[in-house]
Length: 273
Length: 273
DNA sequence: CGAAACCTTGACCGATGTCAAGATATGTGG
DNA sequence: CCACATATCTTGACATCGGTCAAGGTTTCG
Image (cartoon, rainbow over all chains, first blue to last red; front, side, top):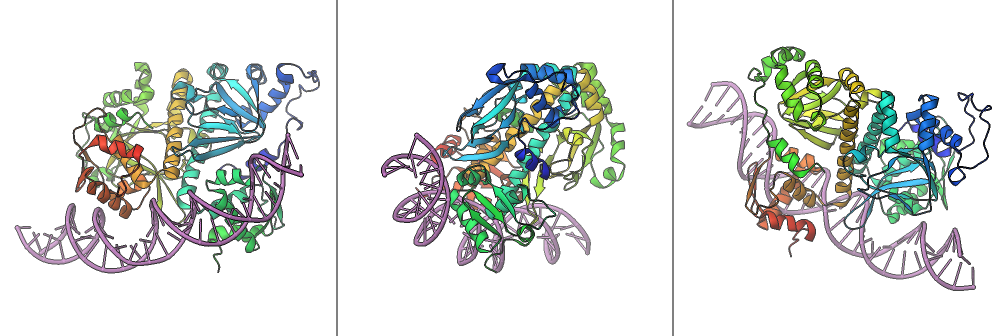
């Protein structure tokens, strides 16, 4: 599983805002007037890239090289970042918004593989070496994505073999996540999946207070992320709130008792008991 | 999905020539597995490695280095190669047998991610850099696996950056496969999955002759690979043979009309129509 | 304000899993 | 080679989850 906390903080992060202590070069390279491509500053890119695990300890100069080649892509709601079998031009980092990475089944249904949120990376770099992208990617919300061209990236990791290792690790993580999804799907009920999703969304383990969760999208999209129909999600929400485990108000869900909710995972859903 | 032909030839390939005492499981496994390597000829390993895509165009000397560090591991039926969250010692290449790569759900059910057969590689190398293996791996049949230690491997791809790229591609392929599985699971019926599996098992596309397929395992294991219960598989076999699409005889399945079988994929199963 | 998208709820159905009972196959010791 | 034990396979009856269809309520946004 993704580091449970990572997901949360990532989702909550807003760019650019967070001061980066390691980067003492800050003051000397004072903010340049917003210029460059689409008014996007290279420094902001550097700054952003530094946050990604994969670049965490890359040398400043190397990072700058990548940032230089990087391109910012803005996507309107519903716009496609790429399609299945496309040869991706490089790796993507989500700066803002949500990218729905999914397959389309023969019957037209969408199978969501992952919702990439701010701070997450879609490493479709290897795709270029063989087949194309394994799925489609579409913005669920207006989104911004930073693209680092494959060429740049490959060149860079010839110089920094460690970067390749990082990327391998990242792909590995994606494999873990896919295996998790597969397991979820096969062995867990929709309700259980939903509860797990909820608990992943920033519930402080220790706290027993109520927690508010704002799904940043429609319920339909959430249902998609969970791999069920919206009718089913609606029923699950109904049932859980009937049991007093949470309260639903529009697109805000209030978990009234995180402990009890967590308990249902072990005990199974409190089926009319 | 793996190139349909590749899978076939790989499965059919036989790798003679590695001297190995007749595997009376008892005594041979009683000795320390690491020592099995002593009676193992490096050249045979080289020869074998060369077959794997990832090593296809590696320089002879480099390949020899890897072969030198390689270890042969022999697994009895049911023996585990590794468990979930283990830190794998390196990458694995299946030389003989079948390795069931799977998750175990909370309720104890097994969720098969992939059956690795002779010639396939389990690249758990990245795992070491972060988390452990994403799943368990167990020999379905008596199997032999070649292990290349991570250290050796990493060292080597510092010298051959291309090797890293190859590995990335290999992980990418695994991602594709997982995404395929996920899609299969969610959107296709068990019968459809089975037919696809059948057609992948070495059916010559052009030929319209009958084809015999020997499942090298029990039907129960096949059901597991398809993600269904054996009762369900039994019913599927019954139905397909009722429709004259195939004949089942013990562990041998004869496809009487590959064309018609393939047609069912597009047309849907000939449900009592 | 009105259209379009979104959400809820009920009735119904189909695909698979579960349980149970037996049939067949495989292997082992005598 | 037989006989028994064990594992595997088949088949039926039944339960359940989640999908589909339909109808109507609610929110959002131009």
